[in-house]
Image (cartoon, rainbow, N blue to C red; front, side, top):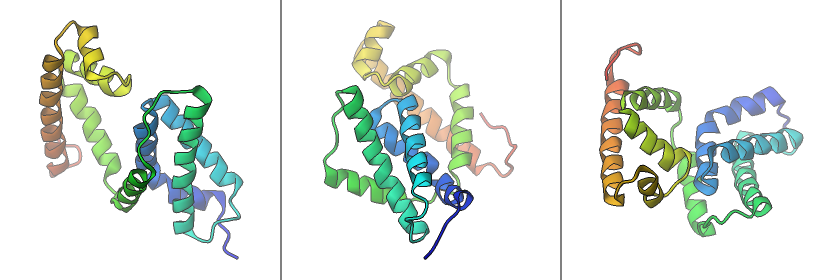
Length: 179
């Protein structure tokens, strides 16, 4: 029988962390709950360390446990979240699992740097929309703007962030400073 110790389990799952928290956020729409779901999944994986037949079985099992943990958090807290159809979630899982994660840390660093380069107003709009989970209309109400204005501002921010991230990732030196 194949046995993985906890350090081996963590070395297999840590490269999946960003993708898995992304899945949790897509279901829960709250950063702190996504992190909670991820931590709960890790605890379950480590508690069941003797059942895995190999690294792929561990990865597959962790994704299913994470998704189920998200649904359980929704049930416990009676959140009004629209869940995607099971077949759609399976497609999303398959797509996320096959993506290369070798540059995720560099992309996250680039995004962080690029966010710092946006205006305070643009950062606040993005925070409200994506970190606070508000809808565009709610952001507009809080900012005293028309929804169309918020949507256009977000679109400009997306373009600026995409261009900035691309420049940072294409920079020949890791330490190159391009804003």
